[in-house]
Structure formats: C-alpha cells, structure tokens
Amino acid sequence: MTANKKLLVLPGDGVGPEVMQEVMHLIDWMDRKRRARFDLAQDLVGGACIDARGVAITPETVARAKEADAVLFGSVGGPKWDKLGFDMRPEISILTLRRELGLFANLRPAVVLDPLVNASTLKPEVVKGLDIMIVRESTGGIYFGEPRGVETLPDGSKKGFNTEVYTTAEIERVARVGFDLARKRQNRVCSVEKANVMESGLLWRQVVTALAAREYPDVELSHMYADNCAMQLVRNPRQFDVIVTTNLFGDILSDLASMLTGSLGMLPSATLGAIDPTTGRRHALYEPIHGSAPDIAGKGLANPMAQMLSFAMLLRYSFEMEEDAKLIETACTNVLASGLRTADVMAPGCAKVGTQVMGEAVLREMEKLGG
Ligand code: IPM
Ligand code: MG
Image (cartoon, rainbow, N blue to C red):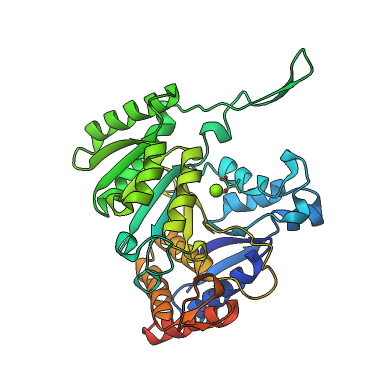
C-alpha cells in the first residue's frame, strides 16, 4: 500500500499534544493492519509556535497545510499568551488556516451517545438520541468583514467596530453543504440568522429560500432567528436535524449545542473548503470542539475521544473511508458503554481512567470489532 494520504498534524497547545498522541497510535494501528497508510508531517501552531518562532503560525506551515490532503488540528491557546496583542494571539493560527485554505463550512455535530445520556445537564428524555449537525459558515461574516478596527474619536474616547457581511455566493455555498448533508440524514434544514434586525440576515434568508426552491425542493427548509434558535435548542433540541448559520451565530450556537451532550470532550468537527474542479479535492481541517484546557494540560486527564472522532470525520469526509470512520465511532461508544470514563464524563459506578488508558481501550475495541 502506498502512503498517498498526506496528513498535516498540528497538535498545538495544552491538552492538544496529549490527545493527538492517541490518534498517532490509531494511525500506527491502521498502518499495521494495512487498512491505510498516511504520509505524515507535524508542525507547530498556536502558543507553541509563538514561543519557538514568534508567530502563531508561519507561512511555511500554511503552505504545507495547502499541500496536504487533510489537516488534523489539536487546540491552541492558554494563559501564558493571553496578554499578547490581538493579532499575535494563538487563536490567529486557526483563523489564518480557515481563511487561507478557504475552509468555509464548519461542520459541528452534537450527538448524544446512549451511554452518556446522563452526562447532559438536561433531562435524559430531552436529549436521548440527539443528533444535530450545525453547519457554521467560517470564512466570512463579522469575523472577517471590513471595515473593522478601533478608532479614537475627537473627544478622545474610542470606537470599536466590526462588520457583518455576506454575499450571495458565500451564502449559497455554505447552504449547499447543509442541504447535501441533510439529504443523507433526516432531510431537514433550519437556516438561522437575524433577518428581523440585520440586512445581511435578510439577504441570508432570501438566498437560502431561493436556493432551496431551485436545487433542493425535496429538503424540508425552515428559518429561525438566532435568539429563538438558542431557546429552542435548550427547550426541544431534537426538533433539529441540520442547522445552517453564520460564523458568529454558529460559534455561539455550536457551543450551546455541544453542552446539550454533556461533554465537550466528546465532540469532533470538520471544516471544509470548496471542491477543486480540476483535482476533485477539497481542503479540509479536522479538530475537536474543545479548547486547550490549560487547567488539566500535561496531567494525562483529557478525554482523547473528540480528537479520535475528529480523525474519524477526516477518514469519512477527506478519504471516503466510511467503514473505518464507523469502526472508530463504534469503538468509542462501546468503550463508554463498558463503563470506562475520563473525568469529564465520569458517572457513578464507572471506572475513571486517563487519556492513555482511554486511547488504548478504543484501540483494543477496534481490534475486537474485527478491525
Ligand atoms: C471556535 C473558537 C474560535 C472561533 C476561536 C478560537 C477563534 O471559538 O472554533 O469556535 O471563535 O471560531
Ligand atoms: Mg467557539
């Protein structure tokens, strides 16, 4: 088997390197089993890169990310770098990768696995079987809109400003990702904005409506204001299948949705670019939803599952290795069902384990499942 799958691994800061280590074992295992071979490269991003190279990400690393078939990202940031200027912070690395690779569709699943139904702060009957996919626009909107800045006013006080801006093309391409995903799920899309107060929100609604009529008449489309969506997500989250929304609303709603599941440590994400018509390839980056968790970093306590499940998403979306993706997902569910838990999802009667034991348990389960 040739190693034709080019992966760039960017562990980052905090718990990033620890949980990434468990994915490395997974990759070794796949190699040993001759399931797949990866051409691996690793690099620094975030605070680790600031310490070594003075910036959160270098142009060389961005270039390597562009060459790779997929990027596996850990997490960045920590108190050590909190005082740095806005343009210097570790978070710039992920924003730069999204922008430079054109990663406009951020897929954030919120799934409640049966063994973890009690981990949620909501009642089990509200979240049992929950399976939402949030598609968050991730290269536009107020995160990148111009003009932006801080200006000094004539009276010496200051004005900070950012701009929410969306074009028809930006709205259509991210909505298409949502509609295509819905077709493989429950065939329902809820488009979320604030069309009642924002012109860009009104355009968003009009464009999604027209696109649905033109290209996706078979998909059930609804619209919701973002504030109502936040409320509905807590009230009755199972009403949603796919949610398509803007960068900022998606940032907020996906954090909310992740907590419906009770564990941030469990949730992966994928961020996809456009398919290149000549190569048929698309840039893609996969990362856990959780951050660098500096409070537990280096202690071997972090849950490696979000990073492992991000790798499963990578197999599914970048390499069409559905069977292998499922194998990892099923193994994670089974290990949880067997009662092994990291601290973040610990429950009475379960056995508390660390990062490494959890990673090994998933591999053992994959082996058992006939991998
Ligand atoms: C996320 C994070 C990032 C964002 C930060 C780290 C820039 O919160 O991926 O949701 O706001 O997009
Ligand atoms: Mg966020």
